Length: 84
Ligand SMILES: [Zn+2]
Image (cartoon, rainbow, N blue to C red; front, side, top):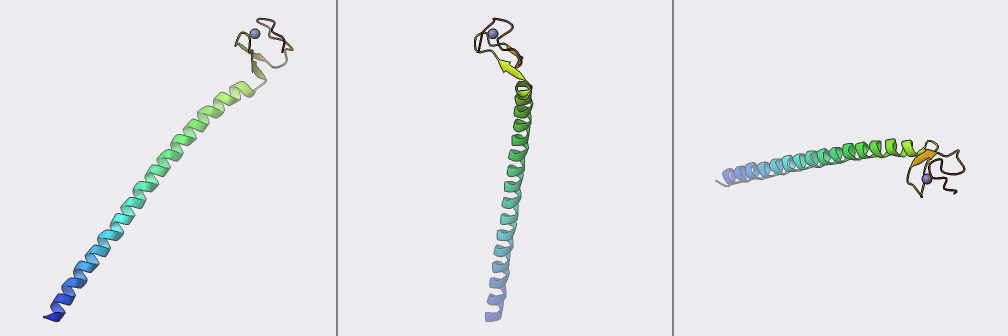
């Protein structure tokens, strides 16, 4: 009788451990999925930001007076003649 109770206890104990491991695996998978999704979003945001930055960085300057973008080579704004 004692052996029967011990074997049932072992089965229940093993089942609990098995469910615990499965729970941890599923939790880790969900966490990894969320992290991967965040990384992809950050990559897309960085990609867009870099593209926008590159557009402004290539010898382009925004005039503080009229707000238009023109080449950095001009000593003053070619549109409103604003001197920097
Ligand atoms: Zn200007």
